[in-house]
Image (tube, rainbow, N blue to C red; front, top):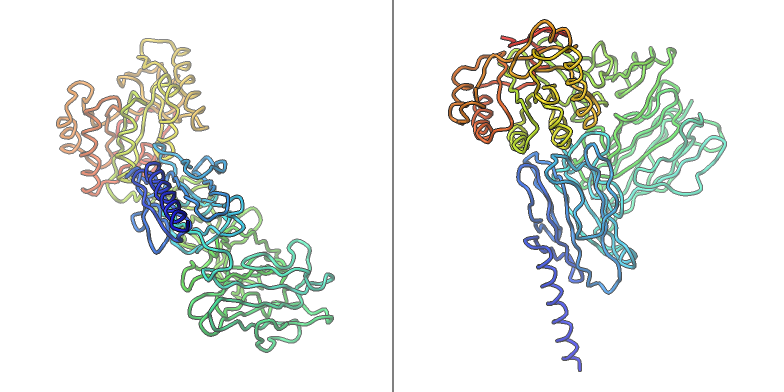
Length: 615
């Protein structure tokens, strides 16, 4: 009877494996536990669908070290645990935000839209969630694996920082098994409130913000499975100075004396100090959140007589964290403000390094001075002009053009001292436009697309992709109308209808135009209400439809400042671009938009003026 049951179980497992392999195609099978099997695929920038791979019992999706974004994932779980339930996940997509939760085996994300995944969440369902944890870690642009492992619906990745996820690792583990990292728990004694009722842990805020209540004492513990060591800490107390170092579970500070905590230092001991960093930051009276301190560094202000109001503490893998990013929490997003009485004291003391608000300006204080120009903060370059953060900027400083996002982070810079060329494409978008965008994307290059409104209205997705890649979109009339043959009213109607189509796709209209055939007169110049852009290199690709001739027209004659005319409605032009774009880059040219070229070479463009090149 036992043999029959054994055979029956073996056949059941074999059948499950056959079904799983048939469903997941080429997806790798990951056995992290005899009771479950994880499989998956990812859609990767420039590569397409890539099967997951197995590493130490984990399912790994994507690539590492290639700076390629994940665009879509699909994960499946074969559950043989005996506990009902499954796996669900959702992703945060560039420009689109969070998707709905989806069940295992279904794709989450996009393919063909060149939109990055920025964050992900996984969770288990049913009784499976009672028995197991799902753990996952995202490899994030600029941050790497610094966020570490998270579990059970916690966000892995970032939102609002425009950072791509390049790789995801996923595994399941029995609850309370030895996979768990060390944990830190803590609670504080607060003015008027006394001790917090519950303990906080792993980055939770302990204390209050916005109430003006001082911290008076703190108690914290660190626990770890099969690891030696612990934690020691000390506090700086009003009128008393630094208190003695105390061990885990011991109160530091005062109770009943009305004395504020002004600073804290925390260190790990034993094996824990070799394996982990302890990171902590404090909310300070009149300042807000300070930067993260690490491994015995002072968090607070010491001699400035400013109270601590709240604290966060986390443990992370040794050396894994950038200076000011811990477990997805960045001091760069903390709001800090100063009044005039605090400002001089803080500058002279040099104890604050971080973001602050001064009047209407957002600034970054590095001890005793405010940062200016292009400044690297936490692995991200930000732009400051006269020490004020520049959001959504298109700013030339010296010979360099900087473009920033809504956070003031520089997402593109162009060195105007190097050769510049603007590639332009007319008469799209068409079925070939996507191929040209692929070539630009793979070469980290941009171009300007002069679109026809009728085609833009029919293919808004391509307009969106042009915009998302940093390309410029210009107006080429609605129906490719020869403007010298129509009235001013018709000219304005052609441009207005095209602007409406473009704005419907990306939220903003065009700001430059190209007259079809390059034909214009005084009436056209007066009616368009924007700069007119023609060209200095005409490839005649529409006429000969020969890739070799198009390549020669560009590569044999190009000079810095040129505007090159091509058409994204021709297959031969797609073929030519596969050579033209990397060739120009290899020669040292920067491929820029017309607007970028004009800003760097001419300080911009004027409405009603015709521009042929910026040599």
